[in-house]
Every structure is written in structure tokens, then in C-alpha cells.
Image (cartoon, rainbow, N blue to C red):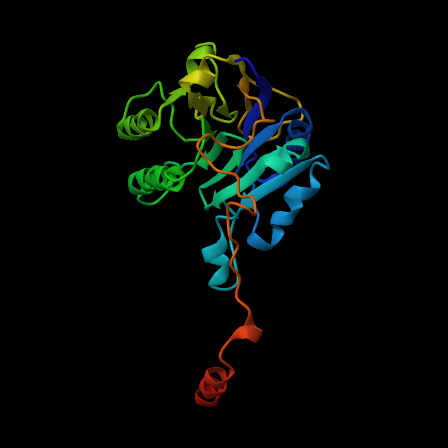
Length: 281
């Protein structure tokens, strides 16, 4: 790439914020963009993620909206996702959408999609898995972008064939993505259970072919401060220069090109308003 920006990214399943706090704080300091899964925060506690790193902004969603809205919550919290972005990129970053299982932001001409796909314990797992991927396709359909970075805890080991593995690979092919796990050593694992000795590679990144050709590093990080059952997965990649942040074929919304309309309450039909108020009250 003639004009490029070297970007560092990492995906990390915290297995609860308190458990992964120290490792997450370190990652937010060291990486440009951090994909976060399983922070387990309720909607009214999401601001706790903003306090982890002073030089980053965080977009987040809670998987517990529906449960908490029904009344007093009991039991173990669960799920939820977020994306931390360095403040140096804030002016060219926009939030596209937040859902309980994924969150999408666009930085310059690159779309970043962080997912936490259903695990084996999820009721109707297959249906929710496919629905989540289909919703992502719909959400990015109208965006103007050049590249995509897709990552997170996908709860699928791509070395083990199956219906969900096929669905995930088909989704990646549909939007032109290539998984980067082939750049890892064959024995790499991101999920481990010390009590049973079980381990697997369920955390992934997938990128457009143009980015795949410009990957500088793909590695699983192991650290003594990591108390989660997942290890962070990190990549470094060259992306188009962020100084040219306007997506291709997209007009800038200057005052001369776009007429901004607004409603003025003091310019409405006062007689109609009084009649309507009389009926309602």
C-alpha cells in the first residue's frame, strides 16, 4: 500500500470484567482496537468500560437488557460485547450498531465487527448462530467501506468440521473474508480449561484478502495477568491511510451539498395544536 497505517488489534474474552480487568487494561494501552467479549455488565454498568483506559473510548452493549427489564435479576450475569478504540482514532470512528451478540464500528474506510457467537449451552444454538451472521450481513449492506475486519469469540474450532463451521465459512466467503488462523502454529489454542485439560481455537480474526496480504503478525498472547479461560488473539495489519477517511464514492456532507432540515415548534399551526390538545386532555 502506498499510503498505509499499521494497525494493531486484539480480541479478548474476559469471562467477566473483574476477572479480565488487569489484562484488558494492558491490552487497551498497547493496541489500537480491542474486541471485548463476555464483560457481563448490565446496561447501567457499561460506563465501567470507559474507566479502564484513559486514552481509549469504548462502545459496548449488554446481553442482559431483556432479563433486567423483566424485574429483579438473579443468577450469574452473562455475555455482552464491546470495542475499545484509541482516542487518536476517535474523530474518524463512528458506531454503526450494537446488538447483544455483536457490535460494529467503522474507522475511516474499514469496518470492524466484533462477535460473541452462541456456545454449546445456548438454547436453539444453531438458529441463533445463523440469525446473528445474517443480521451482520444486513447491517453492513448499506455502508460505504473498503475493508472489513471480523473477529471475536466464535465458539467454533474451524479445524473441526460441522454445520456451524460450514455456516461461519460460508458467511466469510459471502462478504469476502479470509480467516487468519492458518498463520498460527498448528498447536495454537485460545480457550483452555485447566481442570479438565480441554483446549481449542475458538477465537478468530477474518479479514479481506487485501488486508490478509498485509498482515504483519498473528499471535496468541499468554500473560501472567490473564485470569480468563481465554487467551487474547492479536494481529497487526496495514490498512489504508486513515488521513483519507472519507469512504470511496461517498460525498462529504458539506453545507453546500446537503440541506439540513429541522422541525420548529413555533412555526406550526397553532389552531390545530390547540384543537389536538383539547381532544387529548
